[in-house]
Structures are given as structure tokens and as C-alpha cells.
Length: 357
Image 1: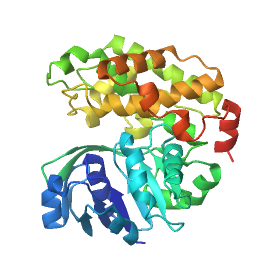
Image 2 (image 1 turned 90 degrees about the vertical axis):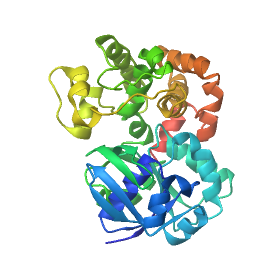
Image 3 (image 1 turned 120 degrees about the horizontal axis):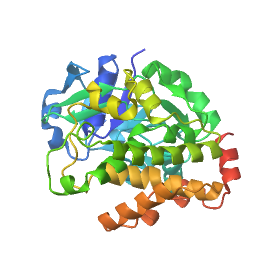
Image 4 (image 1 turned 90 degrees about the horizontal axis):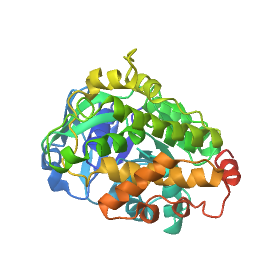
């Protein structure tokens, strides 16, 4: 049944999501802080999509007033970078009520815990918050469109507790056939190939990126030694997952779940030959979400959860330290800490009990 749905954020992922929802006959209301960046969408009232999603799709409205979107929609998707969540939560808080559901469209690790805590701190405790992974490999295409390189056919979703997850399972399956509920919110956040891959690949190509060279991120940026680093980080994801009753698929299996086409040569061959990654270039600066988001919103909380569970994560800790030095920012204090999740006073066992309730 067609619905009125809000999308917060008009970057590539937000535009791809809006086009996808519109293609399914839903009426989409799009919020952006800067409508000039998508002047063509605002002018025409349509998003032009190319690639995996192809066509021109109507939007009900484009606005820089977040309250307008919330008044029109009971379900609001947040498709911003995760490092913007605190600000978005503060903006949304005064407009949300118990009739609303917030869906984080790329929560990283325990995004709904951070978002729920931020909403509560701003005086809003009624809306449910759900998180899932971003489904689209997409890039902006001018001021009126988006190019979608690929569409994940599988991902996990979760609320902060099992009760919240169960309450919204039917809706999310209706919106995105193929998604599945996670055992808990930690499992959902750790089943994220990008969080495992982005930082190691970026660091392995640091000189080329710092010089602004044009590098195909997944095809040219990978080598057998890069895979060693990636798989060492992945092993720590698995170890922390086990401590919190989370079954995390290994990288090659995740890629197969996402897009199919798994190769016998493992992660390296799969990444180099998978069509969805063929045309994706590396960032031309180290000041990029591939480091900021995955370090601040996955590796920092992973490290803190590991410490509470008594699990050593030396590769994770080294990457957080290295990137903090490069960025001139202490991500251990500015990233997604247990305090920002509302779990500062909880033991590992108490955290697990809370998320499985």
C-alpha cells in the first residue's frame, strides 16, 4: 500500500533511497539542508536515476524544513552520514511523537542506541528507532539525479531491543524484500562489509590518496597484503560478535549475500571482478567518510564493546590510533563511545541483556 515517507538527507544514498521508494509508488518527502545542491530535483519535482535503478521518479516535496517532513510522514528514513546523527536527532526531537518510526539507513555499529539516547537527551522518548545498512552503492549525478552502481539484495535490521525489532519487521520486509532481522543490534552493526574494508584499503593506499591520484578503490586498491589486514580486522569483528551472541558472516560470504557472484579465489578476486565495484574510485583526500564514519561509528564502539567483554582487538585499536593521528582528531573521545550509546555504566553482560530484551 502506498505511503507518505520522509527521507532525511539528499546525498547519493538519500537520492537513491528516494528514487527506490518512489519507484514503488510511495510519496516521498525529501529534506536537505541545502536545496541548491539538488536544484534540478527541486525544480522538476523528480529524481533522475541511472544504473541499477533507471528512470525519473517523482518526489512529493523537497524542503529545508525538517518539521514539514515529520508532519507529513509517520516513517522517516535518516540517510545522512552517521557522524551527523547527533545533530539530526536534535533537529528531529521536537517534532517526533509516538506515531513516528525513525529508520537509520546506514546505522553502522549500534546507531539506534546513539540516536535513541540523543533523542532522549533532547526530550523525545516516544518514537521507535530502527537501523539497517545502506542498500545502494551510489554516486551523485549532477543536481537532479543519482547513479546507482548496485543494490544489496540482503542486509540485517534491528531496533535497540528485540521488542522494537519485532514490532517493525513486517514493515521493513514489505519495503525491502530480502532484509532479515538481526539477533541483536550488535550483530546488525558487525555484518557490514564496508566497515571491515574501507579503513584497511584506504590506509593501504594512503600515499596515492593523499596525492589525489585517481584510483579504482576496490580493483586497484587491493592486493594480497591488503586482504591480510582486512581479514585480521574481520577476525576481530567475529570475536566481539561471539561475545555478544552475534553470528557475523566472513567477508566473502557477506559479499555473496549482498550481490551474489562469489568467486573461488576469495575476497580479492571477488572484489576485483564484481560489477558493482568496478567504477568506484577512491577518495582524493583522507578527509573522507570512508575513514571518518567507519572509524568513528564502527571501530570506536567495537573497541569499547570489546574491552567490556574482555576481547583483545589490537588491529582495531591500531587503526583507530593511526587514523586519529592522521586526522588530528582523537576519535576515542569524539567517536561513538559507550557514553553516547547510553551504556557507560553497563558491563558486557548487562549490555547483552538489554539488547536482547
